[in-house]
Length: 235
Image 1 (cartoon, rainbow, N blue to C red):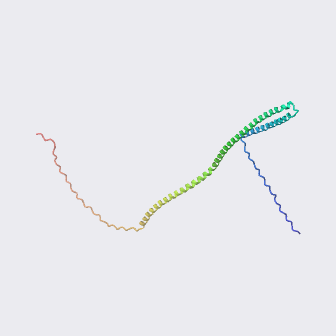
Image 2: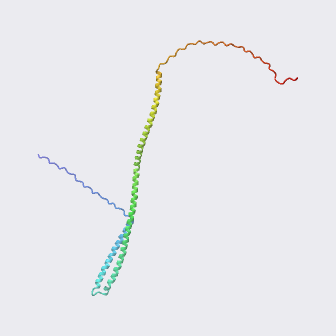
Image 3: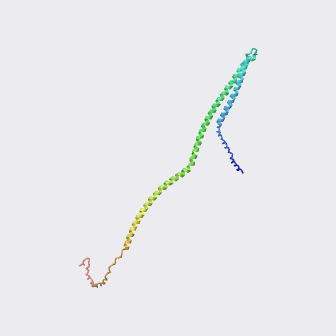
């Protein structure tokens, strides 16, 4: 038996890269420019039409001159070049008029383009300002959060330092109070720990009798005869 034939692995078909479609952004033509451009196009067309008339009249003039130079030329043929020359002159005058209109139309187009450019620059500046304002407005909330976070961190740090200072001061005061109170309590404890001293017994003193007081008989004071005071008796 022969060896089994190896089946070649099928390669996946390569995917064709899809061609990216490039969208051409056509800028809107301002109305004033479009109007001026139409005038230029119309004037250009008029000049081309009039030029063809001038060329045709010039050919006829050349043919008339050739016919007039022939030996057997008629009177009409001989007069034809002058008449044809007048027609050529008239057609050329018309050509000059339409050419002047074309020149003016081109000037108007140029002015319209400049005006449109000025308006475009002003609009772009305004759009840039609006875009800048929108970006700042969008960043306002984020900036506010950052500012509040920074202020909170700074305020917390300051407050923590103040609290620590107050706590330290309070701790010192309380420690001083506790130390003073401890000293007093220790003094009382020492005093309480000492044995009490025995007081000497007091001797009994016999109560002495108060001496009897002699009652002295009080004599009534002799009354003095009071003499009458006043005027002497009449004789």
